[in-house]
Image 1 (spheres, rainbow, N blue to C red):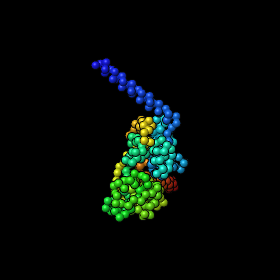
Image 2 (cartoon, rainbow, N blue to C red):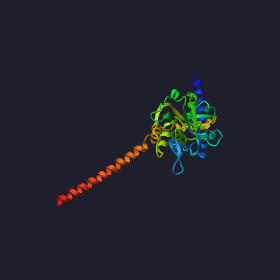
Image 3 (cartoon, rainbow, N blue to C red):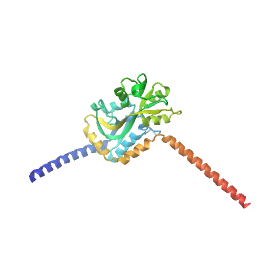
Image 4 (cartoon, helix red, strand yellow):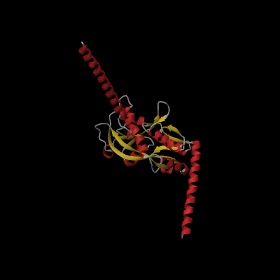
Length: 287
């Protein structure tokens, strides 16, 4: 019995050794060549082109953190959303930076472990009713073309007319112009883009439709790269994930920063006034 047990243990260790060598070998390939991540260029705060011409955003920072953990260089290819999926399936990029699992996409991709969560919501104008199933049967709801939000409307609300737009910015402007009665959006992206307008539009969240897990994705069957990516994701702590989300997903952060600036300036003016008043009193006392 003991000899059989030792033989089984030896076999398991042998298999684990082969797997370890294989993973190490595949990682060496990526350490040398790096990976290319495809993602959208117009989805603040998830991803966008910064003023320096470099990609910025939560998803970008997440993959840069992954790169720091693994030592594997990361390059980014940004485009409109509907271009990003073919980039990976056709071999123009190694990884999709982040998307939601759907049955259709599972035919094309193998998914990584979750990166982070995000809420899909229905936004409407203030005072407008927001029950999709009853209030929008004769109306129109907007969503980004080829995004999960568009499919969500089609699947869950078949009686609602869907209007699709190429980018989140185009969807926002259609909402402002009144072309759609409501919009199904990722809330942080919609909120931030709206605040960047010269005249932000008033809106309210009528319903939280889903809380979604965002995954990276590789072309179907690329299990070698999938294993390397998941090994790196396992090294990212919850605290690090929370830090990145809090950095980018702070509703009203811009207003808060402006309020803080005015508070600081008001305090400075008050302090200067107090100093001048004290000097004036001191001079009168000397006389």
